[in-house]
Image (cartoon, rainbow, N blue to C red):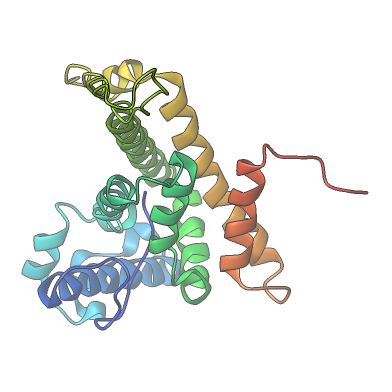
Length: 248
């Protein structure tokens, strides 16, 4: 999940120690500088030197975070997907997979109201650069696959949680819980990883990604009506309810 996050050092969202928060702040500063320069001058005229200077870091520091210049436009926060997957797997067992996904993604969107203008500019830059847009779509697909794999892992972990049926004797020992379903063998390509997944985790991950996009787009067009967090939660509430038809 690629989001342009730049949480302040004192923010608890996203976790991590001081060093990790500083690294995230530097990455965010580089990504923001690149986007704003691209909007002003065009992507083709933006150099690594200009991005680094605008972010207040050295060129060497730039290459500590991004392998190429194009990566700063595409891999804006390479760790966001990993944080979402960790949060999903660490979520309380009582949450449904949909609820766990919702909460994990919400933690990455705590600054949506402050960052939406930059997100819009980033989208403009990608749409104006077909090669960057294609790379961005590929990165999003990889994140979606990773999210689906985390959903599958959470479902497998829950497969061993059985209930003890009522028996004829209270003294009878409870039956042993069945072992969790075995994990599928590792796949070597993105396409093989997707084929190895069952329908449920693939569908849930895809629906969650679309839900985020719809939440952001809807809120951006009606910012004065209510906070983004309310729109985001309503979208997932509607999904959890089975998308009932609204009252006339």
